[in-house]
Image (cartoon, rainbow, N blue to C red; front, side, top):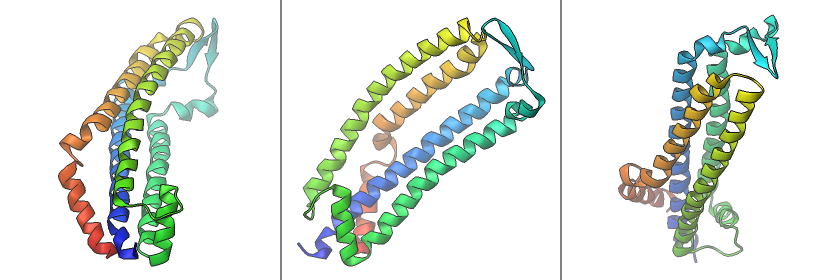
Amino acid sequence: MSITNTSYQKAKIIVEETRRLYLQIILLVGIFLFIIVRTIISRNFLLMPSFTFVGENVSFSPELSIIQSPFFIFAYVAVIFSIFIVFRYIKLYNLKRKFRSGEKGIKKLKKYMKTDKIPNKEEVDNKFDEDKNKAKRKFYILVIRVVVLNFVLYYVFTNYISNSFLFFNIILPFSILTLIYRYLLLFHSDKKFLGEKWENEKIEYYISEFN
């Protein structure tokens, strides 16, 4: 198989990685907006000078008061989310750059597909179909983990920290909405946006670029 015959394979990989980048951005932006709204609503809790832990009243030291600031929370979460997005963008950028460079592109294609031979069109398509099925199965496992974790946190916050407000008004709704958001992106994003039409247009664009 010649180098030009791998144009579809490379294009398909780039399009799928681009889709993952877009979905990650949408997911993290949605979570970030939720955190902003909940932080503003729960500002009275964030600014409280003390809390009860195992029956004892614990006060925040003046040096730690900054972490109760909504601005600190927004900035901290924004930095963490930005790191995730930048990391995936760099991965996509390097993938495009290597795919454009002849033999290096072939080596990168083999490495990406974890094979010693040049993968054909069907093998690349099957890989991403399998990845999507695995992601859906992992989602159901995630639901179970979140349910168990919420039971544990509920027990801790009601019996040791004596602050069920934090659990019921921040942690629980955050968990539920995040799962709903992830479900919609995972199971319905290809029907509403980033679907077959978008994918085909992008694949054609990158095929012409790699030829």
